[in-house]
Length: 312
Image 1 (cartoon, rainbow, N blue to C red):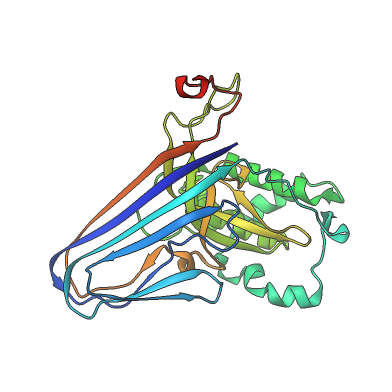
Image 2 (cartoon, helix red, strand yellow):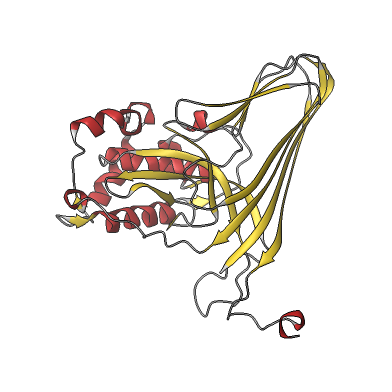
């Protein structure tokens, strides 16, 4: 069963004067490892007088580098894409035999490649993080199944940190998030990434789109999901498990990443995965974001009655 959706994402920066804009880097193109097929994609920039060059950064992210040769009073960034939403089993992978149980040790050559994703020096860790980890380690039996460990850790972070839409820039430190026990998706994602690293599991921060569709039927128990089709920028993290590769983990929901998670950028640090980076000369800015999601094709499925067109 496939549902094709059209995603429209517009970011508009309106300045109170004509400004000189430094080159901007835009990470709003689905990553090569996205499991959700993207059948069409476009990126449009205003002002019309600009130079755009596609490149890949050190993490392999697609980056549009945009130069603005003339002063401008606005910058408009518009993304349109078509996504094919087919149900994905997030557990559809195999592990190398030696990594099936925790703890495991990465071979030297692999560990060298994963150094940026095992680094805990930048985590600003403190007593709250270490106390949380100590309590979590007491839950782990000897030789615990690695996937069961990831699921448990993800759920524990979800239970610890309540979700908040936070408009302030930047990412909270792990100590702040654990102290407040509340944070945005990027705060929970960064906390989960650091917990994984402290457990010896390589992890990376992910910025992307999250698409959530209204369910055909309301569940008999548990959360009912969104009341309307929904899309937004979101953050989660990925853990590297030999044999399976990078496994997406969403600490906001406590679930593994599925077909609604479309990664745009990955990095060792959240700052390197920002959707848009760039500066202008001094000004006052009005910033507006518009995101819409439209279903344009739905394959017939048993959970819904046939339409008049299908039965004729």
